[in-house]
Length: 507
Image (cartoon, rainbow, N blue to C red; front, side, top):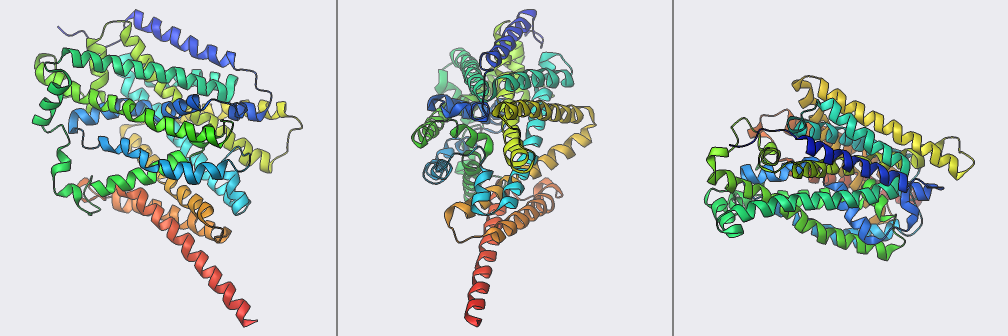
């Protein structure tokens, strides 16, 4: 007989000790006399810690359940998107990192002012605050919704509990606390999924080979890659090789090259060489890390296929399959440890998001436009207050999503996804700024404006307002927005140069 879902007292004890340890790290790193200490860990963090922190931060709790769920329900066809991330490594190492390390900065948007003007900086930073703030709130909500049945607590309680703890140690320790907490959380997260994977493999007849053979026999392997449609250039095929490549290049170029959340970690290293090492290390670490999550989904498909008596009922959604297994088949204590790992994934995303939001708020807006405090200590004190403000905003937004109706939930998440596509606009503007000196602020304004309009138009008219069978593939949307952003900037730049040349010749 399979045990009922839920956590035992021992599991809750493990979670309490875990949370206490996380808060303790905040106290350990609470001395941050300058903004460089608070936001960039004194620019002295070892490259290995930065690499681990980036992996932990970008791997949210939603990914924890989504990857096994996708493999369980649809197979491994989408898995190659993960190792494909290495395709953007040369762009990050040879273009973005040297650009950021030419002079000391706190945010990527400072470079937009140096390259264009103040307005470009504020627009870019504003888009980032909008997108990242919404993303953190949705991570809160989606994680609480996925884990609420197992934890046995109301979603709002989970959101507030995790939010208060993440905000507290971020408030105390700044970037040092965030990075070290990310490292600890990564170890717990990786250890937890390895435990599940090893347990499933050891219980399977034939081990890894038996699991994969069973999966391929039931179309849970790389079956999509053998179809003719997979190599189509159609924008309406849900997944093709070319749309997958486009998605990987656009999304990961932004994530690893432009996102303030990631760049802030590069800037916490001592020099360009260390930043490059952290980049290489994170990509090497990411490949086996993500592979474990995908193969766990495949192993669960084999496990329940071979043991139908304990298989989940049809009402269990694919994204809940990992939590279903954990709460019903693992021993007490281990369940608490693994749920600690899941909550670790939530907090890694949340603490980093709040820290980067605060950095952009203080450096790009308050410090640049507002009344300046006289001392570094005053800036640090102000930054801590903004950590609380952003934390309250994200927690309150997530609680609001959890409290409204299911119809409203869908609407909010769709709007957030549309905002997320604005990342491609930021990537386009930064490419215009970095690749040549010929583009001016007028080009940046055109790129921001056209890119934002195309984001709203394509995401709504060609995706959310259409029935599923008539939608453009979500994998193409970012590439379309990036192309429109670059085209607008290049076109305006060309027109401005021709106009200037004509004016000079006329005189």
